[in-house]
View 1 (spheres, rainbow, N blue to C red):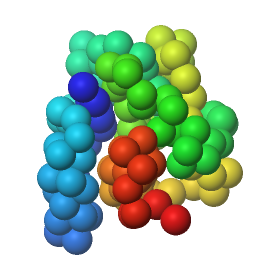
View 2 (cartoon, helix red, strand yellow):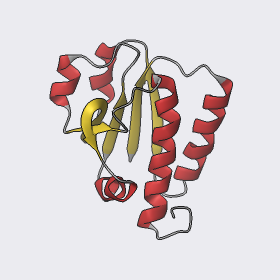
View 3 (cartoon, rainbow, N blue to C red):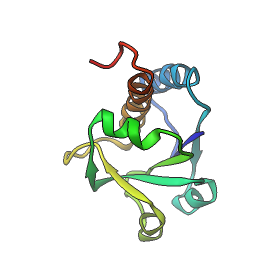
View 4 (cartoon, one colour):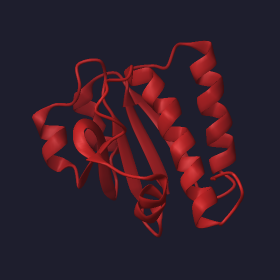
Length: 131
């Protein structure tokens, strides 16, 4: 089971469509839910299992490493809002994941995360998507 807990509502139509497409693809492999919370204080009540927060100061990893992280694990990914994540949320995290040293819009990172989760499952299943 995978959860993605995000602060704020995804608004841009192209991002909503992209995320929904990857969620549909991921469901072929695993249960997944994307939970949108209004306030950061609500994040931890939805976090279950291994908690991986997206943090620019976190560890960068390859798609293959992400696939390994997902294997046989209940995981919650946390995407903060424009202000980032509070110290409390960061301290509860089991892992801090960075997509890059660059800063991305918090809404766009949801699409990128969904794509990488899908890619990870195609790696696990040895399918052709990942090259």
